[in-house]
Amino acid sequence: MNQPIVLKQLRAEWISAEKFQPFGQLITPTEDGKPYDETDARLNLQNGTPRFYIMRLHKRGRRFHKITRHSLCTQCLGSLEGKDWFMAVAPPSEASEPDIEKIAAFHIPGNCFIKLEVGTWHAGPYFDHEVVDFYNLELSDTNEIDHFTYNFLDSNNLEFEIL
Image (tube, rainbow, N blue to C red; front, side):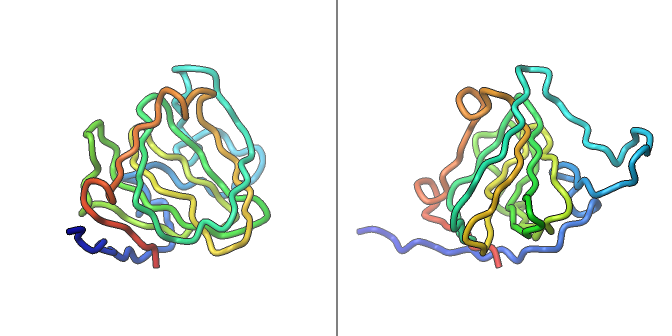
């Protein structure tokens, strides 16, 4: 007999550089001409050809049961048109599964972007809008050769919902 699916709710925190630091960087607007410093995205794109593109996502909601990590590059994501969104993350690792107790959810405004550290587990972007366009910086073959996904539904009979 099948067990009922367990729904774990994650309360999203408004993102801040300090809260997001274990997972990557929050990049916010700065004045033009500012010299490079620790507030700029520290990218790792040396393992292939960088790919910078706009992806269109439809009606994503806030539930998930899969989480992914990339071990060859950093990844940057941000929404266009000022639309806010959500992301669930777990600390970077090369383990075959993330630490469920360390999964965090963030509410991200549309005037910034995030840089995920190499190996950071992530689920999203999620949102309540009908359609959101996101810019995405990763490697050209990230989704073919550097895309490890863990399925909580198959392995733990678990689904998450971001509140």
